[in-house]
Image (cartoon, rainbow, N blue to C red):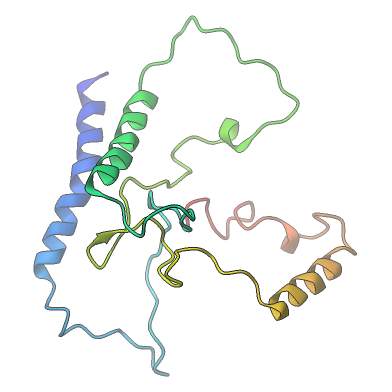
Length: 182
């Protein structure tokens, strides 16, 4: 591996920690901080948002609320190891891939298009095992009866069209409205 790639990987893994440490030092106390509000008084959620995190959205039923320091180190080091392994030069003598009838997203895109993240999400100083913080089990709650009814109505309404009869039915990422990592 060339030294430029190694230096780039090192910068990519160390820089986020340095930046977050500096930002934390410049922040006032939590007691002084106020939630930004829109003119009508609602929380202001404007900004650049991403789901770039190694933390899953929902926690498995047998998983603890937070990761241990050893788990965090193993998860984050796994990212570094996979990145380094993926940056290795390809074997020029390897055989061609087997022909397939379908092409999957894995075959079509590389890591540039998937923002998988390189850090575990930290909530209130704790490395969380899920991005969902409420309810406390860290899992997506089931649908209410009303929501199930609305879903059934939407499904019935969509059934009159072929899968992709008009642009509004195309997937959001395909229409460039969202990316795979946003």
